[in-house]
Image 1 (cartoon, rainbow, N blue to C red):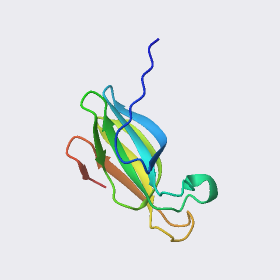
Image 2 (cartoon, rainbow, N blue to C red):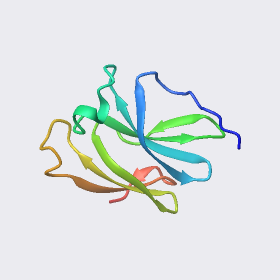
Image 3 (cartoon, one colour):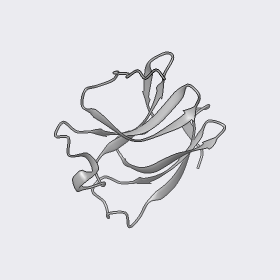
Length: 108
């Protein structure tokens, strides 16, 4: 087996919770902090849902500075995840979001 690593995007994005969106695209939650605290101390930190298209090397941010939890590909280019506000109640209130990766828009 051949394994290769990809290094793209800002150095301060630390990927977590990876999943395959399709054969060519990986999604992940990236913590955007320079202190590398990430989810060790608190999940209620600013993060972004990203997609990375492997053949082209394109990194795309799906969300912008919210708290994203448990992203899952559900088929047909769709991703479902929980979203909470930064610094809000710790996992007491979250929205269930469906994102269409083909249309690049939130549909629910």
